[in-house]
Image 1 (spheres, rainbow, N blue to C red):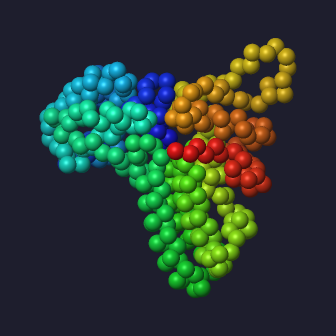
Image 2: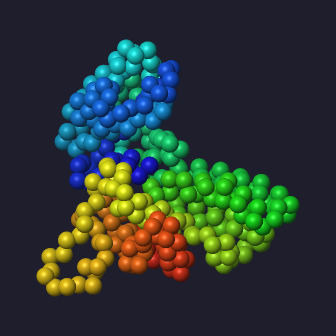
Image 3: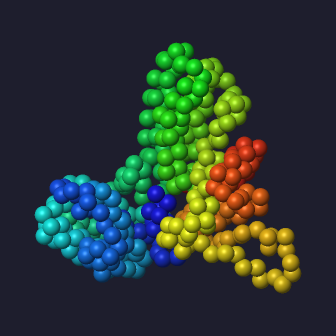
Length: 342
């Protein structure tokens, strides 16, 4: 999920983006696997449109400026028309009812909604939100709808856990709680980096309720000691943990390449020997917008540079995760994660 948001939030390319989600009917999953050098991939890239392929849908990404909105929409229409033709030639059918277009940008960009976005090939409708891989993206990238869905699902499972908690040992209840609820809180949570404080607080209340249910504590009991006793990081720190762990994997393996290419080592302009010279710092690009500060190329290096040297210099991923969790457990949740209000 980190690459999708990077494409949508890249401030160096444009101020607004258009995402098309095309669902597919028919065919087998092996035929729907898209390789960069495939005929269909070359067909899409020939229009200057970026793409991403899942098992049952194709996602197209088109970056536009306000001055090129009409040309961008024409490009999108031509690309979707050729994609539909390719599917028809290979005995596959695009589901026009589930094909959607979502525009992402600042409030000023949404005056472009009045522009025609209906494609004669797919007839996609302009949507305010779009679901991809279980994550609901909205046009402002606030993830309010996604957070509301996660909270609703988690609260239901917490309610059912309370009914059977007295029948379970503590270790079983703890494992069950994390498997059913905690996994949902952690799923693709790196996209919530910089999400509004109100959204993070909603998820935190869910985690607090889960801790009370596992430890059979009253609903109004203070949750922070309960989280510490369970060795659970608060929601904001779990997001920071996910981003930092991803950074360590990228720096250690240089994979995936599309994320590794966004990272640059920090080069000091000073000739003096500094204490920071022994730390593997990364370059943080300058940005003038909130959207720019949330891109992977900015948020990930900022998070990485805020970690102590003994953590970033860990010899293995296991050692890195252990040191990072110990470090986060002894710091306040708001000490590292920068929450940007909408």
